[in-house]
Image (cartoon, rainbow, N blue to C red):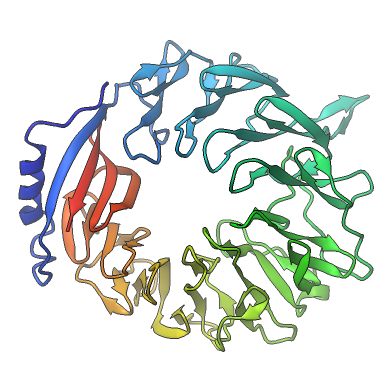
Length: 489
Protein backbone atom coordinates (compact mmCIF):
# COMPACT_ATOMS: atom_id res chain seq x y z
CA UNK A 1 0.00 0.00 0.00
CA UNK A 2 2.77 2.41 -0.71
CA UNK A 3 2.71 5.54 -2.82
CA UNK A 4 3.89 5.29 -6.40
CA UNK A 5 3.34 6.62 -9.88
CA UNK A 6 1.39 4.24 -12.07
CA UNK A 7 3.13 3.14 -15.24
CA UNK A 8 1.82 4.86 -18.30
CA UNK A 9 -0.35 7.16 -16.19
CA UNK A 10 0.54 10.36 -18.04
CA UNK A 11 -0.09 8.94 -21.48
CA UNK A 12 -3.37 7.35 -20.42
CA UNK A 13 -4.69 10.55 -18.95
CA UNK A 14 -3.62 12.60 -21.97
CA UNK A 15 -5.58 10.18 -24.10
CA UNK A 16 -8.55 10.64 -21.74
CA UNK A 17 -8.47 14.36 -22.47
CA UNK A 18 -9.44 13.52 -26.04
CA UNK A 19 -11.98 10.81 -25.21
CA UNK A 20 -13.86 11.75 -22.04
CA UNK A 21 -16.87 14.01 -22.40
CA UNK A 22 -16.93 13.89 -26.20
CA UNK A 23 -16.46 17.37 -27.64
CA UNK A 24 -17.68 19.19 -24.52
CA UNK A 25 -14.59 21.38 -24.46
CA UNK A 26 -13.91 21.78 -28.18
CA UNK A 27 -14.72 25.45 -27.96
CA UNK A 28 -12.02 25.96 -25.30
CA UNK A 29 -8.46 26.29 -26.56
CA UNK A 30 -6.57 25.26 -23.46
CA UNK A 31 -3.17 23.60 -23.64
CA UNK A 32 -3.47 20.77 -21.13
CA UNK A 33 -0.87 18.49 -19.59
CA UNK A 34 -1.95 15.86 -17.09
CA UNK A 35 -0.49 13.12 -14.92
CA UNK A 36 -1.86 10.53 -12.50
CA UNK A 37 -0.37 8.77 -9.51
CA UNK A 38 -1.79 5.76 -7.67
CA UNK A 39 -1.69 6.50 -3.94
CA UNK A 40 -3.15 3.27 -2.54
CA UNK A 41 -5.15 0.23 -3.52
CA UNK A 42 -7.97 -0.21 -1.05
CA UNK A 43 -8.36 -3.70 0.47
CA UNK A 44 -11.54 -5.70 0.14
CA UNK A 45 -12.60 -4.80 3.69
CA UNK A 46 -12.31 -1.03 3.36
CA UNK A 47 -15.36 0.81 4.65
CA UNK A 48 -17.04 3.14 2.20
CA UNK A 49 -17.35 6.74 3.32
CA UNK A 50 -14.28 6.62 5.59
CA UNK A 51 -11.44 7.74 3.32
CA UNK A 52 -9.57 10.84 4.53
CA UNK A 53 -6.90 12.68 2.56
CA UNK A 54 -4.49 15.11 4.23
CA UNK A 55 -3.99 18.61 2.88
CA UNK A 56 -0.90 17.50 0.94
CA UNK A 57 -3.22 15.52 -1.35
CA UNK A 58 -1.17 12.36 -0.93
CA UNK A 59 -1.39 11.10 2.66
CA UNK A 60 -4.38 8.75 2.95
CA UNK A 61 -6.24 7.01 5.78
CA UNK A 62 -9.37 4.84 5.85
CA UNK A 63 -11.27 2.36 8.01
CA UNK A 64 -10.91 -1.36 7.33
CA UNK A 65 -13.30 -3.95 8.78
CA UNK A 66 -11.30 -6.89 10.08
CA UNK A 67 -11.86 -9.88 12.41
CA UNK A 68 -15.25 -8.69 13.64
CA UNK A 69 -13.88 -5.24 14.45
CA UNK A 70 -12.29 -2.34 12.62
CA UNK A 71 -8.99 -0.51 12.35
CA UNK A 72 -7.67 2.66 10.77
CA UNK A 73 -5.08 2.25 8.03
CA UNK A 74 -2.91 5.35 7.53
CA UNK A 75 0.01 5.77 5.17
CA UNK A 76 -0.21 2.07 4.33
CA UNK A 77 0.26 1.01 7.98
CA UNK A 78 -2.70 -0.64 9.79
CA UNK A 79 -3.44 0.63 13.28
CA UNK A 80 -4.75 -1.18 16.32
CA UNK A 81 -7.95 -3.17 15.97
CA UNK A 82 -10.95 -1.92 17.95
CA UNK A 83 -14.54 -3.08 18.20
CA UNK A 84 -15.63 0.22 16.62
CA UNK A 85 -13.88 3.29 15.20
CA UNK A 86 -14.99 6.55 13.64
CA UNK A 87 -13.67 8.08 10.45
CA UNK A 88 -10.06 9.27 10.68
CA UNK A 89 -9.33 12.99 10.72
CA UNK A 90 -6.02 14.54 9.62
CA UNK A 91 -4.49 17.66 11.13
CA UNK A 92 -3.44 20.39 8.71
CA UNK A 93 0.25 20.68 7.79
CA UNK A 94 1.58 18.07 10.28
CA UNK A 95 -0.86 15.33 9.09
CA UNK A 96 -1.29 14.01 12.63
CA UNK A 97 -4.18 11.58 12.82
CA UNK A 98 -7.09 11.36 15.23
CA UNK A 99 -10.28 9.33 15.61
CA UNK A 100 -12.63 7.91 18.25
CA UNK A 101 -12.65 4.23 19.18
CA UNK A 102 -14.03 1.72 21.67
CA UNK A 103 -13.13 -1.84 22.58
CA UNK A 104 -16.73 -2.79 23.38
CA UNK A 105 -19.78 -3.46 21.23
CA UNK A 106 -22.23 -3.36 24.12
CA UNK A 107 -23.56 -0.04 25.45
CA UNK A 108 -22.63 1.74 27.56
CA UNK A 109 -19.12 1.50 26.11
CA UNK A 110 -16.40 3.97 27.01
CA UNK A 111 -15.10 5.75 23.94
CA UNK A 112 -11.48 6.82 23.75
CA UNK A 113 -9.82 9.41 21.55
CA UNK A 114 -6.94 8.05 19.49
CA UNK A 115 -4.26 10.63 18.65
CA UNK A 116 -1.18 9.45 16.74
CA UNK A 117 -1.97 5.88 17.81
CA UNK A 118 -2.23 6.71 21.54
CA UNK A 119 -5.58 6.05 23.22
CA UNK A 120 -6.75 8.86 25.50
CA UNK A 121 -9.63 7.96 27.88
CA UNK A 122 -12.56 10.39 27.88
CA UNK A 123 -15.23 8.98 30.28
CA UNK A 124 -17.70 9.33 27.40
CA UNK A 125 -19.79 6.62 25.76
CA UNK A 126 -20.12 8.34 22.38
CA UNK A 127 -17.70 10.25 20.14
CA UNK A 128 -17.20 13.96 20.71
CA UNK A 129 -15.91 16.79 18.53
CA UNK A 130 -12.21 16.83 17.58
CA UNK A 131 -10.50 19.98 16.28
CA UNK A 132 -6.92 20.80 15.31
CA UNK A 133 -4.93 24.00 15.55
CA UNK A 134 -4.24 25.71 12.20
CA UNK A 135 -0.60 24.57 12.29
CA UNK A 136 -1.60 21.01 13.15
CA UNK A 137 0.54 20.79 16.29
CA UNK A 138 -2.27 20.88 18.86
CA UNK A 139 -5.67 19.28 19.28
CA UNK A 140 -8.81 19.94 21.29
CA UNK A 141 -11.99 17.99 21.90
CA UNK A 142 -15.42 18.55 23.41
CA UNK A 143 -16.91 15.45 24.99
CA UNK A 144 -20.46 15.26 26.32
CA UNK A 145 -20.81 12.77 29.16
CA UNK A 146 -23.81 10.47 29.11
CA UNK A 147 -26.83 11.18 31.29
CA UNK A 148 -26.70 9.80 34.81
CA UNK A 149 -29.86 8.17 36.18
CA UNK A 150 -30.47 8.72 39.90
CA UNK A 151 -33.57 7.11 41.44
CA UNK A 152 -35.00 6.67 37.99
CA UNK A 153 -34.55 10.34 37.06
CA UNK A 154 -32.05 11.21 34.28
CA UNK A 155 -29.61 14.00 35.07
CA UNK A 156 -27.54 15.68 32.43
CA UNK A 157 -23.80 15.47 33.00
CA UNK A 158 -21.31 18.12 31.90
CA UNK A 159 -19.39 18.69 28.71
CA UNK A 160 -15.64 18.13 29.10
CA UNK A 161 -13.05 20.09 27.14
CA UNK A 162 -9.76 18.31 26.48
CA UNK A 163 -6.75 20.10 25.02
CA UNK A 164 -3.57 18.17 24.18
CA UNK A 165 -4.69 15.48 26.62
CA UNK A 166 -5.37 17.89 29.49
CA UNK A 167 -8.79 18.23 31.14
CA UNK A 168 -9.58 21.96 30.80
CA UNK A 169 -12.79 21.93 32.83
CA UNK A 170 -16.39 20.76 32.87
CA UNK A 171 -19.32 22.91 31.85
CA UNK A 172 -23.09 22.60 31.58
CA UNK A 173 -22.68 22.96 27.84
CA UNK A 174 -20.18 24.44 25.38
CA UNK A 175 -19.40 25.16 21.79
CA UNK A 176 -16.57 23.09 20.32
CA UNK A 177 -13.13 24.53 21.15
CA UNK A 178 -11.38 26.71 18.57
CA UNK A 179 -7.68 27.55 18.25
CA UNK A 180 -6.27 30.98 17.52
CA UNK A 181 -4.54 31.46 14.15
CA UNK A 182 -1.09 31.05 15.72
CA UNK A 183 -2.23 27.98 17.69
CA UNK A 184 -1.16 29.46 21.02
CA UNK A 185 -4.65 29.90 22.48
CA UNK A 186 -7.86 27.92 22.53
CA UNK A 187 -11.32 29.28 23.34
CA UNK A 188 -14.94 28.21 23.62
CA UNK A 189 -18.28 29.52 24.82
CA UNK A 190 -19.63 27.86 27.95
CA UNK A 191 -22.90 27.92 29.81
CA UNK A 192 -22.32 28.62 33.50
CA UNK A 193 -24.46 27.76 36.51
CA UNK A 194 -26.89 30.69 36.35
CA UNK A 195 -27.60 30.11 32.65
CA UNK A 196 -25.41 32.92 31.37
CA UNK A 197 -22.75 32.47 28.69
CA UNK A 198 -19.05 33.05 29.28
CA UNK A 199 -16.04 33.07 26.99
CA UNK A 200 -13.37 30.64 28.17
CA UNK A 201 -9.81 31.20 26.90
CA UNK A 202 -7.11 28.67 27.76
CA UNK A 203 -9.37 27.27 30.49
CA UNK A 204 -10.02 30.62 32.22
CA UNK A 205 -13.59 31.93 32.08
CA UNK A 206 -13.96 35.66 31.46
CA UNK A 207 -16.74 37.80 32.91
CA UNK A 208 -19.98 36.25 31.62
CA UNK A 209 -22.42 38.07 29.40
CA UNK A 210 -25.35 39.72 31.16
CA UNK A 211 -28.80 38.23 30.90
CA UNK A 212 -30.98 40.05 28.33
CA UNK A 213 -33.20 42.70 29.87
CA UNK A 214 -35.91 42.33 27.20
CA UNK A 215 -37.50 39.34 25.50
CA UNK A 216 -35.21 37.56 23.04
CA UNK A 217 -35.47 34.18 21.38
CA UNK A 218 -33.90 31.46 23.51
CA UNK A 219 -30.99 29.27 22.60
CA UNK A 220 -32.12 25.74 21.87
CA UNK A 221 -31.88 23.00 24.50
CA UNK A 222 -31.13 19.54 23.18
CA UNK A 223 -31.63 16.27 25.03
CA UNK A 224 -28.51 14.65 23.64
CA UNK A 225 -25.15 15.22 25.25
CA UNK A 226 -23.04 18.25 24.31
CA UNK A 227 -21.47 20.22 22.91
CA UNK A 228 -24.79 21.72 21.82
CA UNK A 229 -24.52 25.50 22.34
CA UNK A 230 -23.78 25.76 18.62
CA UNK A 231 -25.18 26.72 16.17
CA UNK A 232 -27.11 29.66 17.66
CA UNK A 233 -23.94 30.74 19.46
CA UNK A 234 -20.88 31.63 17.40
CA UNK A 235 -17.22 31.81 18.38
CA UNK A 236 -14.62 32.36 15.67
CA UNK A 237 -11.02 33.49 15.79
CA UNK A 238 -10.22 36.19 13.27
CA UNK A 239 -6.97 36.45 11.35
CA UNK A 240 -5.53 39.08 13.72
CA UNK A 241 -6.09 36.88 16.80
CA UNK A 242 -9.26 38.61 18.00
CA UNK A 243 -12.51 36.80 18.79
CA UNK A 244 -15.82 37.12 16.98
CA UNK A 245 -18.70 36.23 19.30
CA UNK A 246 -22.46 35.85 18.94
CA UNK A 247 -24.20 35.30 22.27
CA UNK A 248 -27.10 36.70 24.31
CA UNK A 249 -26.08 39.83 26.26
CA UNK A 250 -27.93 42.61 28.08
CA UNK A 251 -29.50 44.15 24.97
CA UNK A 252 -30.16 40.90 23.09
CA UNK A 253 -28.26 38.58 20.77
CA UNK A 254 -25.02 40.51 20.28
CA UNK A 255 -22.37 40.10 17.59
CA UNK A 256 -19.06 41.55 18.74
CA UNK A 257 -15.48 41.59 17.53
CA UNK A 258 -12.83 42.05 20.20
CA UNK A 259 -15.44 43.74 22.41
CA UNK A 260 -16.74 46.07 19.67
CA UNK A 261 -20.44 45.52 19.01
CA UNK A 262 -21.30 44.98 15.33
CA UNK A 263 -25.02 44.39 15.82
CA UNK A 264 -27.77 43.44 18.28
CA UNK A 265 -30.97 41.49 17.51
CA UNK A 266 -33.92 40.04 19.40
CA UNK A 267 -33.86 36.82 17.41
CA UNK A 268 -31.34 34.40 15.94
CA UNK A 269 -32.39 32.33 12.96
CA UNK A 270 -30.86 28.92 12.54
CA UNK A 271 -31.58 26.23 9.98
CA UNK A 272 -30.86 22.54 9.84
CA UNK A 273 -29.59 20.83 6.68
CA UNK A 274 -32.45 22.14 4.57
CA UNK A 275 -34.95 24.98 4.62
CA UNK A 276 -36.28 24.22 8.13
CA UNK A 277 -36.09 27.28 10.34
CA UNK A 278 -36.48 27.36 14.07
CA UNK A 279 -39.37 29.55 15.09
CA UNK A 280 -40.57 30.64 18.52
CA UNK A 281 -44.15 31.62 17.80
CA UNK A 282 -45.51 34.88 16.49
CA UNK A 283 -43.56 36.97 18.97
CA UNK A 284 -40.42 36.96 16.84
CA UNK A 285 -42.01 36.51 13.39
CA UNK A 286 -41.31 40.10 12.32
CA UNK A 287 -38.32 40.75 14.56
CA UNK A 288 -34.94 41.85 13.26
CA UNK A 289 -32.55 38.93 13.37
CA UNK A 290 -29.20 37.50 12.36
CA UNK A 291 -28.78 34.13 10.70
CA UNK A 292 -26.12 32.44 12.79
CA UNK A 293 -25.59 29.73 10.18
CA UNK A 294 -24.77 32.47 7.65
CA UNK A 295 -21.74 34.07 9.32
CA UNK A 296 -18.46 34.05 7.36
CA UNK A 297 -14.97 35.26 8.26
CA UNK A 298 -12.09 36.02 5.92
CA UNK A 299 -9.11 33.66 6.08
CA UNK A 300 -6.37 36.31 6.14
CA UNK A 301 -8.03 39.49 7.41
CA UNK A 302 -10.20 40.43 10.42
CA UNK A 303 -13.32 40.75 8.26
CA UNK A 304 -16.74 39.26 9.00
CA UNK A 305 -19.82 39.06 6.77
CA UNK A 306 -23.30 37.87 7.66
CA UNK A 307 -27.01 38.04 6.78
CA UNK A 308 -29.44 40.11 8.80
CA UNK A 309 -33.21 40.53 8.51
CA UNK A 310 -34.71 43.97 8.90
CA UNK A 311 -37.60 44.37 11.31
CA UNK A 312 -41.04 44.38 9.71
CA UNK A 313 -43.81 42.20 8.35
CA UNK A 314 -42.24 41.93 4.89
CA UNK A 315 -39.11 39.74 4.94
CA UNK A 316 -36.15 41.87 3.87
CA UNK A 317 -32.64 40.45 4.20
CA UNK A 318 -29.29 42.05 3.41
CA UNK A 319 -25.62 41.15 3.65
CA UNK A 320 -23.53 43.03 6.19
CA UNK A 321 -19.76 43.31 6.37
CA UNK A 322 -18.18 44.58 9.59
CA UNK A 323 -21.48 46.12 10.68
CA UNK A 324 -22.31 47.89 7.39
CA UNK A 325 -24.34 46.84 4.31
CA UNK A 326 -22.10 45.61 1.48
CA UNK A 327 -24.44 46.98 -1.23
CA UNK A 328 -28.01 48.13 -1.83
CA UNK A 329 -29.43 44.66 -2.62
CA UNK A 330 -32.47 43.61 -0.56
CA UNK A 331 -33.59 39.96 -0.73
CA UNK A 332 -36.59 38.03 0.52
CA UNK A 333 -34.18 35.53 2.13
CA UNK A 334 -30.70 34.12 1.87
CA UNK A 335 -30.36 30.99 -0.26
CA UNK A 336 -30.46 27.75 1.75
CA UNK A 337 -27.99 25.77 -0.36
CA UNK A 338 -25.21 28.21 0.56
CA UNK A 339 -26.21 30.48 3.44
CA UNK A 340 -22.91 32.22 4.34
CA UNK A 341 -21.58 34.90 2.01
CA UNK A 342 -18.34 33.94 0.25
CA UNK A 343 -15.35 36.14 1.08
CA UNK A 344 -11.94 36.32 -0.55
CA UNK A 345 -9.17 35.59 1.92
CA UNK A 346 -8.44 39.31 2.35
CA UNK A 347 -12.15 40.12 2.77
CA UNK A 348 -12.19 42.64 -0.10
CA UNK A 349 -14.34 40.58 -2.48
CA UNK A 350 -17.71 39.12 -1.56
CA UNK A 351 -20.36 37.04 -3.33
CA UNK A 352 -23.66 35.58 -2.25
CA UNK A 353 -26.94 34.11 -3.52
CA UNK A 354 -30.43 35.07 -2.44
CA UNK A 355 -34.08 34.96 -3.44
CA UNK A 356 -35.30 38.16 -5.06
CA UNK A 357 -37.31 40.69 -3.05
CA UNK A 358 -40.70 39.41 -4.27
CA UNK A 359 -39.91 35.72 -4.78
CA UNK A 360 -42.73 33.63 -3.33
CA UNK A 361 -44.16 30.70 -5.29
CA UNK A 362 -41.33 30.65 -7.83
CA UNK A 363 -38.02 31.56 -6.24
CA UNK A 364 -35.88 33.57 -8.64
CA UNK A 365 -32.34 33.37 -7.29
CA UNK A 366 -29.75 36.02 -8.01
CA UNK A 367 -25.99 35.86 -7.51
CA UNK A 368 -24.32 39.09 -6.43
CA UNK A 369 -20.54 39.52 -6.85
CA UNK A 370 -19.13 42.76 -5.44
CA UNK A 371 -22.48 44.45 -6.01
CA UNK A 372 -23.02 43.14 -9.57
CA UNK A 373 -26.14 40.99 -10.00
CA UNK A 374 -26.36 37.86 -12.14
CA UNK A 375 -29.34 35.67 -12.98
CA UNK A 376 -32.06 35.01 -12.13
CA UNK A 377 -31.79 31.24 -11.75
CA UNK A 378 -33.97 28.57 -10.17
CA UNK A 379 -31.20 27.19 -7.95
CA UNK A 380 -27.57 28.06 -7.21
CA UNK A 381 -24.75 26.21 -5.47
CA UNK A 382 -21.03 26.45 -4.81
CA UNK A 383 -20.21 30.15 -5.12
CA UNK A 384 -16.48 30.95 -5.35
CA UNK A 385 -14.67 34.27 -5.64
CA UNK A 386 -11.23 35.12 -7.00
CA UNK A 387 -8.53 36.42 -4.68
CA UNK A 388 -7.20 39.39 -6.63
CA UNK A 389 -10.06 40.43 -8.93
CA UNK A 390 -13.81 40.90 -8.84
CA UNK A 391 -14.64 37.55 -10.42
CA UNK A 392 -17.11 34.93 -9.26
CA UNK A 393 -18.10 31.41 -10.27
CA UNK A 394 -20.97 29.11 -9.34
CA UNK A 395 -23.21 26.27 -10.47
CA UNK A 396 -26.80 27.11 -11.35
CA UNK A 397 -29.88 25.76 -13.08
CA UNK A 398 -32.82 27.39 -14.84
CA UNK A 399 -34.97 24.28 -14.50
CA UNK A 400 -37.41 23.40 -11.71
CA UNK A 401 -37.16 20.25 -9.67
CA UNK A 402 -37.17 17.26 -9.86
CA UNK A 403 -34.78 16.92 -12.85
CA UNK A 404 -32.86 20.15 -13.33
CA UNK A 405 -29.93 20.57 -15.72
CA UNK A 406 -26.96 22.30 -14.10
CA UNK A 407 -24.31 24.51 -15.69
CA UNK A 408 -21.15 26.14 -14.38
CA UNK A 409 -20.79 29.91 -14.70
CA UNK A 410 -17.92 32.40 -14.55
CA UNK A 411 -19.09 35.99 -14.12
CA UNK A 412 -22.52 34.97 -15.36
CA UNK A 413 -21.27 33.28 -18.56
CA UNK A 414 -22.12 29.58 -18.81
CA UNK A 415 -19.41 27.06 -19.60
CA UNK A 416 -20.13 24.25 -22.00
CA UNK A 417 -21.54 21.11 -20.41
CA UNK A 418 -24.92 19.96 -19.09
CA UNK A 419 -25.04 18.06 -15.80
CA UNK A 420 -27.62 16.31 -13.63
CA UNK A 421 -25.57 17.22 -10.52
CA UNK A 422 -22.95 19.91 -10.06
CA UNK A 423 -20.50 19.97 -7.15
CA UNK A 424 -18.68 22.91 -5.60
CA UNK A 425 -16.37 24.54 -8.19
CA UNK A 426 -13.11 26.39 -7.52
CA UNK A 427 -11.66 29.45 -9.24
CA UNK A 428 -7.94 30.00 -9.68
CA UNK A 429 -6.56 33.16 -8.05
CA UNK A 430 -6.82 35.42 -11.14
CA UNK A 431 -10.40 34.24 -11.57
CA UNK A 432 -9.79 33.17 -15.16
CA UNK A 433 -10.27 29.39 -14.96
CA UNK A 434 -12.68 27.09 -13.15
CA UNK A 435 -12.03 23.56 -11.85
CA UNK A 436 -15.10 21.44 -11.17
CA UNK A 437 -16.73 18.04 -10.68
CA UNK A 438 -20.19 17.04 -11.88
CA UNK A 439 -22.35 14.03 -12.69
CA UNK A 440 -24.25 13.36 -15.94
CA UNK A 441 -27.72 11.89 -16.00
CA UNK A 442 -26.12 8.52 -16.78
CA UNK A 443 -22.64 7.22 -16.22
CA UNK A 444 -19.85 8.11 -13.84
CA UNK A 445 -19.09 11.63 -12.60
CA UNK A 446 -16.47 13.73 -14.37
CA UNK A 447 -13.99 16.42 -13.41
CA UNK A 448 -12.43 19.10 -15.53
CA UNK A 449 -11.25 22.62 -16.14
CA UNK A 450 -13.47 25.26 -17.77
CA UNK A 451 -15.46 23.47 -20.50
CA UNK A 452 -13.09 20.50 -20.79
CA UNK A 453 -13.99 17.15 -19.19
CA UNK A 454 -10.71 15.55 -18.12
CA UNK A 455 -11.48 12.29 -16.34
CA UNK A 456 -14.21 10.05 -14.93
CA UNK A 457 -14.17 8.71 -11.36
CA UNK A 458 -16.16 6.67 -8.82
CA UNK A 459 -15.56 8.88 -5.77
CA UNK A 460 -13.71 12.07 -4.90
CA UNK A 461 -11.91 12.86 -1.63
CA UNK A 462 -9.70 15.91 -2.21
CA UNK A 463 -9.75 18.85 -4.56
CA UNK A 464 -9.97 20.63 -6.76
CA UNK A 465 -6.96 22.37 -5.19
CA UNK A 466 -4.79 24.82 -7.09
CA UNK A 467 -1.40 23.62 -5.93
CA UNK A 468 0.59 26.22 -7.88
CA UNK A 469 -0.12 28.76 -10.66
CA UNK A 470 -2.02 27.09 -13.52
CA UNK A 471 -1.93 23.67 -11.86
CA UNK A 472 -4.85 21.92 -10.14
CA UNK A 473 -5.14 18.53 -8.45
CA UNK A 474 -7.72 16.00 -7.26
CA UNK A 475 -7.69 12.69 -5.39
CA UNK A 476 -10.33 10.32 -6.77
CA UNK A 477 -11.31 6.68 -6.52
CA UNK A 478 -11.36 4.43 -9.56
CA UNK A 479 -12.62 1.05 -8.47
CA UNK A 480 -10.46 0.26 -5.44
CA UNK A 481 -7.56 2.54 -6.42
CA UNK A 482 -7.10 6.00 -4.98
CA UNK A 483 -5.52 8.13 -7.67
CA UNK A 484 -3.97 11.61 -7.55
CA UNK A 485 -4.70 13.57 -10.74
CA UNK A 486 -2.79 16.75 -11.59
CA UNK A 487 -3.64 19.01 -14.48
CA UNK A 488 -1.45 21.83 -15.81
CA UNK A 489 -3.26 24.30 -18.09
